Length: 377
Image (cartoon, rainbow, N blue to C red; front, side, top):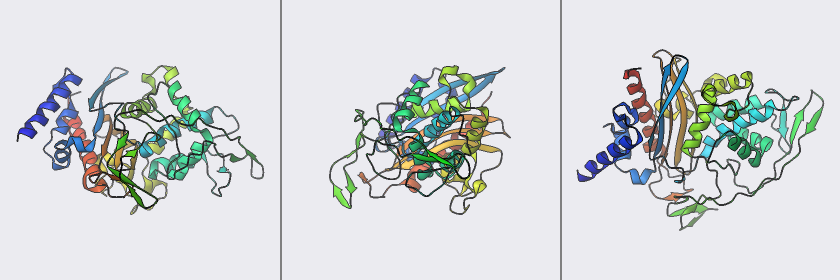
């Protein structure tokens, strides 16, 4: 009982500090819900490393007004971003594409040494529909990590550090050439680039757990994430805002995309797997939509669009989303991450994704959605 009182006091203190208008803070209300999917996490916060940013959206005449509310958001507290990095990589790939007159979304290409032919449009569709690693890595070869990082920083996205491909482990700093079709019979290669070796991150919680498996052997020491990708909640939210609401930012802070590119990106972000040819039984609507629908295989109603990118790896689940209900005139932004690794061992595939993590994120989205429907605008 005493512990519960302490948690309640802590929440009230934290949210009051975040906003003088605490009675309007829907994130506070959602996290103090009695729903067991939320309560079991909030009762053991030190275990789950939760970070959340929710943005309330109001409109006045032609202006869009943001009010951000945070819970435990701290750039210096590291979490593994997993596939959420595919979002900014897709965005800056489109930006680079916009700068090359001879290429477009549907230009065919393949990576040298690989037989799979693709296009930038296909890669982006696969990234958002089912979080395809190979599609992301093709864009990684197109850009290279130095160019990715430079483009993000030039748009005011910080802190961020993209250092590696996804789905396999390599320290290869050299990008592979792309073989690009100029027409049906003529191809040309791109030049490979040599990228900078990443500096180890010096952040809180950069070493996690009490052990990890490597090559089938258990190593009894914390798992070191210092050379991994780094993409905190504040940066994820910043990319999302710039893509969804570019009119709210100076031109220098906006990604240089054509209107056709941005429209395609937005469509890919909310399109469900079944609508681009994936098996609906395996890739159900909530497969890559953790908020609201992640813990159910029900169909997402047509009037609800979720523009998002999720990530899940090493026991960490993250979703960064703009949620829009066209029927009820509701929209908001929400980014959240949670670590579910009860045994403290990494690479053992024993993570509580389905038992704790996804239910928490799904219910968090539902709680805020219900409160958004009820709030006055």
